[in-house]
Length: 131
Image (cartoon, rainbow, N blue to C red; front, side, top):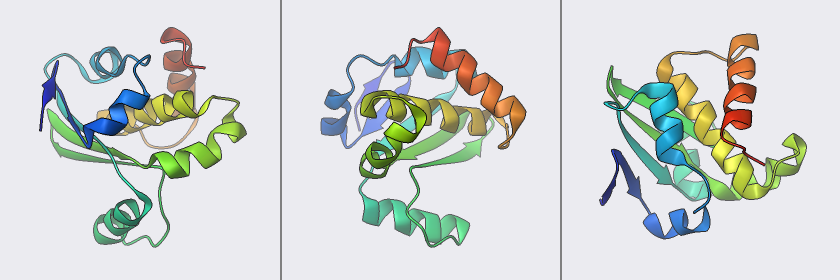
């Protein structure tokens, strides 16, 4: 698994589809420079299996985040699900994937769904010019 500035990427051919989004800077802004994060882009089968195995949910999620300890975590994004949802958020497909990355980082930081998380999502989308 290659390292890129403290984010480990798996299934790296997918990352080439999103060269304009500053994943490292987003990670550092939300989680800090010392946080070790693995970002994995997965297909629908793997996303659904992870959701079932670790959350006992049967649907295919767009993003999953798993804290492994206080300074290590994993985010799994399913681009095919995300691409279908992007228009609902008035973002490009690539922008919505970046939004999901922000969402996952906020969960790793300890934020639950709700007003605070939504406000922070808007703040980071604006800060990093996600469209």
